[in-house]
Length: 207
Ligand SMILES: Cc1cc2nc3c(=O)[nH]c(=O)nc-3n(C[C@H](O)[C@H](O)[C@H](O)COP(=O)(O)O)c2cc1C
Image (tube, rainbow, N blue to C red):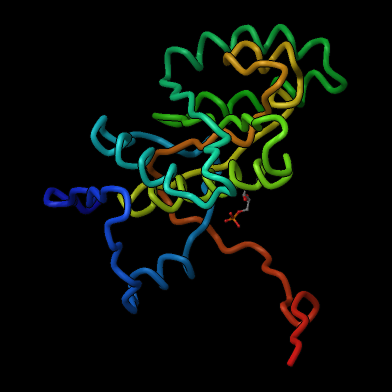
């Protein structure tokens, strides 16, 4: 991985003029080649503490309607994930397909670092759907930011995101929803391309 020793996030104050986008081949190529990692294949190195701070700041720089910031982050290192995974393994036995639910726990514990993005909609504000979309956009920006530092990432939910007792083990309350576990680390092999949609079936062009 290439180090970015001189990289520091610009710090804009409220109402500062933020530069207009400049054409960037590197940026476009990054979007064209982005691929999720298989979560269980993510290994060290993961982001340093400084890089994590910057990845979180970039992730939080995401569209949201009404400046509500309707999401929060829970940063999970290997120790907390291992402890929670042990408890999830017990809960998995009460799920519909215990062996599958056990097996996917490997995705939770492999990566050096995980950012859990929690959707925290504010009642009686903008539509809840829009607030949840904003949390999804945060997940995507976290992945882009991780990739800017040369890491790979996986956006995972799995059954424990949708089971209240399981989600509570991570500190997610009943009024909140898991938007995603963003696992970040390094892949030793490049990922293979996956199917992409035929845009002729997806795009309507109106004059
Ligand atoms: C909200 C959401 C939840 C996801 N949950 C899982 C999951 O639990 N397990 C999984 O293997 N992939 C999951 N994925 C899919 C991967 O994150 C990834 O998008 C997929 O493997 C496609 O790879 P790509 O991002 O390179 O196109 C999820 C994606 C989204 C958007």
